[in-house]
Length: 426
Ligand SMILES: [Zn+2]
Image (cartoon, rainbow, N blue to C red; front, top):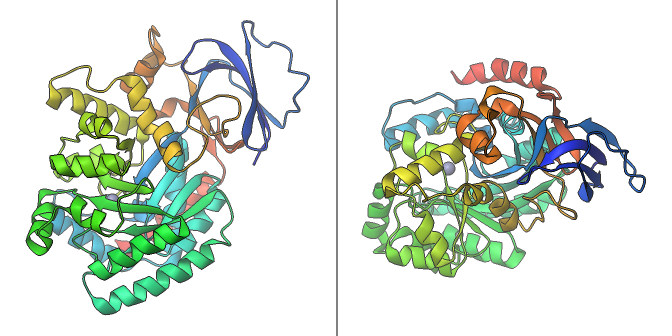
């Protein structure tokens, strides 16, 4: 974790200038000043110094639902219904190797850093390789072992053993990485696996990551097979808790919303993925929040949303909520920002998602010199609704500068290797 001094940044959400001092990955001091280039604070030792003149410091994004290495299948299976699309993707995924997972995750981390994400919550295969990629990228992540046994008892037994040994191996991971347990969904995972995963996560204090009510087909399947909604089914196995991310949470009954609220589940809206796969769009933001659930945003994997750009996800989330509710006040910018950043940090138990003394130093510097920030009535409005993510100049994670002047270390090598290796999949 780094030491750092950021000089002359405008401090979001205000308009004042400030120097931000970082010690061992934590914001140790913020010194507001009215004049440009005020003398360096004598009490604080600087590591690297970044001049943020003309830039606004904004908390880093938390992308709370990803399948990072799916960058390797970006653009495959376009314009298909969900079932056919899943079959096409799973066919390509059967060729995935540890090398592909490593480079796919490196490419995802590169893309996330370039678009201001400092924390992501991932569900995918062969995660020791993803953990190496995350550590080499310097970003923060929660990586989950994923159950997907297709109701096969033998597979369930194998996956329970694999999950336990993966949890043991995760103790030696380097970098800013946590380990969690994922169950793919109610339509791909047996009751034996759900039961085991719920108890294992509870006993070991692990985060749980699952897909919930992504489509109406999933709901019909669950009702027919178990005579319950997916939320009722997962609650039965202790899988809906305050340690759970429930990705999508799209087709919910009134009782489902109560279940998510009562258990303080973190419901993650993946708007661009849902729209593109035509899964639905009426995410019950207001109702879930009122019931007590936590709300965060995600992109889902690159096979469905095609990119990992959280600022783009924020814009689509907001304009869609406003449109279908016929209410322009349905998604205010401060709540949108909390869903894109602070909510994910809170879920992970990390003191981040804000730029203040004592918070972990995960933030970005946004260059406001471009046309999108003129005349400049409201920074957040310009950033979300007018700009694109190329305005993000610098990204800091745990005090480590991961991008500066739009440049990320090893960027050329990552893109070159991925081009070469991903050809095997086409
Ligand atoms: Zn997903």
